[in-house]
Length: 537
Image 1: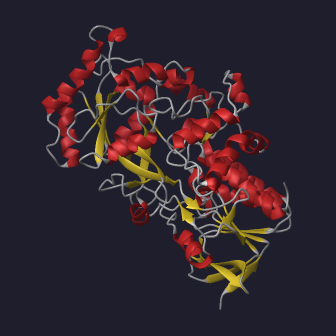
Image 2 (image 1 turned 60 degrees about the vertical axis):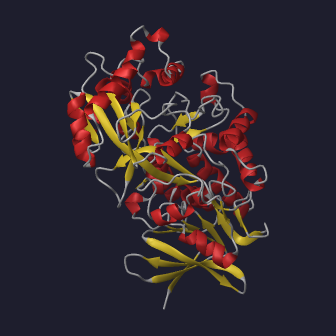
Image 3 (image 1 turned 90 degrees about the vertical axis):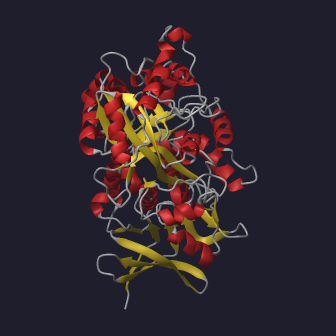
């Protein structure tokens, strides 16, 4: 016989979206059962490990840096870069809601929760031809996204007056329950004991994350007109398997839309200490590194440079003959530019160590470079290109890298500097020069120089491959985060927030994101659901 637990609302998923929804509902006087598959120390989902970048519009930080942004400018950038379908009214409505309310509903709200930001606004996803972010919008949470999780966890404890919050860890919701045609809760399984528990509630908020954490689901959804590499690393989580999405579609006529749109990263490598099988880390590729194919030749004719169009980078990597590419750089570049996305490898920001963070920014993050040299089999270092070639071939168990060809690749790039930087005629160099015009980028981007510059060694080669990350599609929702059925009507009592809803509407980013739109999307959609459920506006 199943155990049972009653509350006003069941929230499925203890990531950022689920935590925000639960917090706002508790503050509105509702009792909440918050169900999460992971252990208590890993609560918060991907947010616990995320870097904490947020694309925000019209903030005081932007004004302080003389960035004149507005919802109108942001929406133009968003729709153009994302290639949103104008007929996709729910996604378009959420895109508009995001640019109009990211300041009030995210930035201001976080400040009230005692969450602050680094003082610099960064400029990412500019577009290869300027069609991306026309202005810097990328705000970084001081403390990374883990700080969000810690602050919200404490806020949930404070809001839990009289035991109104039941937080069930290591429980998996396997089905939604109905009685007399009405939603009345969910059925969960305790993954430690296997025991079933009936979670009774007239309202369910789905916050279980994306669709593509499981590789079988990811491959099934992969667009047929885009290249699919033979192997992929997983930067999401196997728990984000899409099973509950399909359950809603099969039993309640919910609509999964834009399932083939994903936000992946082009330069991942295996986590040295994986949290699950196939776990990949995503580097923030060094702008000054040469991006090479499996043979050690520069990918072109347009060189691959990060910071402009991640979606395009992923497609270029996916279409290569083998599922890995190489980042070729030297120690000088790595110390200034090499970074790994997420809080785990950005300890100075994550742990709020400002002086150490400032020192590593100004003097170089040699600590991280040495750490990866020790820990990662994909991170190769050698004093010579010949020696590096041998290590690259040993890693891949091939003879793909011809030392003479690798030397010729480097020589051809270095020749650009023979007549001085003013006469260099290479698109990668042009993009680096452009990026360095923005002060925060100048701090993290080397002045262009030959790869074989004296004293800049040793040489470094990083084997990278495509790593999955976020689902851009999900269950179709309206602006109240209510799940819609096939006819476009709201399913009574059922809400969906965060990545499970494609961060709003079922895919408000379209084909590509302006980057940093996901954490705010979790907050926006969760707060919208809580307002609708509680009757607040």
